[in-house]
Image (cartoon, rainbow, N blue to C red; front, top):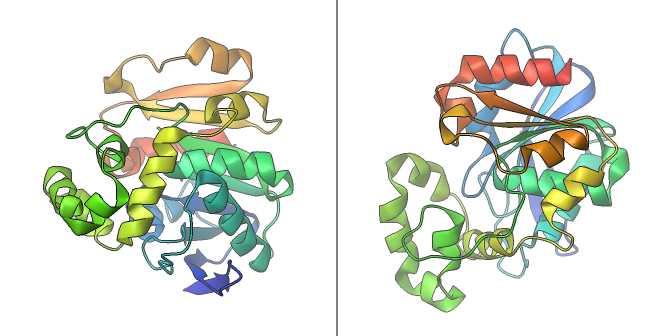
Length: 254
């Protein structure tokens, strides 16, 4: 386990690191998750092993610190991640990022282009969403005010999220979870989709085939983004179908 201070108060981002050749690969988890659990099997798969790999936890999540003074905007997450990568002497990384982590990775590539050479986005958030009580995920969390969420709304979210997600969500600071969800739903200006369209690096977007055609595929492909459907999986592609995910990721990075 490695760490780096990423705020003026000294808050630490932590990551599990596998030795190997450069350029490094950086794995970034989604909301309420942790990269070592979600990506360990992928990083050591025969098609992907042998590369220096950082399985990194965003601030407020997993093994990283959970400061209550941090705003947890997508830009804040991206800048904190950039600070950790610079401390790790990473440049030109291949970034594989899931869900909210994909949104953070797009912002990272836009704000700190020297750190990213290639993007593999895994069912990432590209567009603003509407908060909705009882909806699954960030929309549900963002439907609460922060005080309401901290006072007990998080228990309702826990019960709706289910045991699998709660197993890692419980490691996330409550302020971090709520603020990250609020800013993820709100998105960026310009949107994450627009930022992705304008990035100059090779980009691949993986999505679950059972969800049907990914919205906006034609525009993405026209901008050079490869859009790839992965079979037999849901949102957590790397956990639901790890073999197909490893093959799709390896192809994207070839």
